[in-house]
Image 1 (spheres, rainbow, N blue to C red):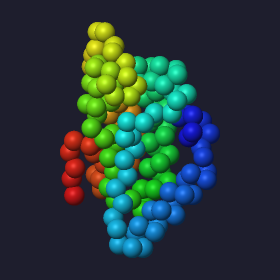
Image 2 (cartoon, rainbow, N blue to C red; image 1 turned 90 degrees about the vertical axis):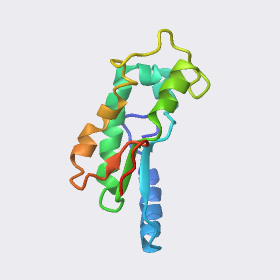
Image 3 (cartoon, one colour; image 1 turned 180 degrees about the horizontal axis):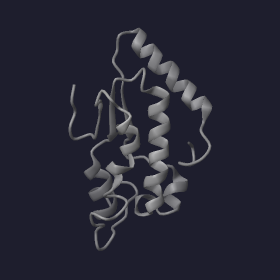
Length: 138
């Protein structure tokens, strides 16, 4: 989803399918991270993680990616180091998107509710393989 919502880049999905298949063929266990601090520019232009809709768009993305790759990918990280995007990106402004939000977003903000945006995808994960970047489990 190049714009973070709507249209899916089928060529991108095909690339990752081939990559994941190659890893598995070489006996390399893939671990997929859904969010590693990058957000499509269009979503950032619409307010980024401070816009509640971003969490909903991310949920659609997470569900699609999980549906596409869950059979081939045994381990998932929903968000790598959530505090980096939150505190450094929106509090101190030293990490993308470089904002110093005052007052700092509280627990009700879309940024703080990010983990819940993955709930639908994780609920389908009967093997309990998904986690955030703070707690890896074999």
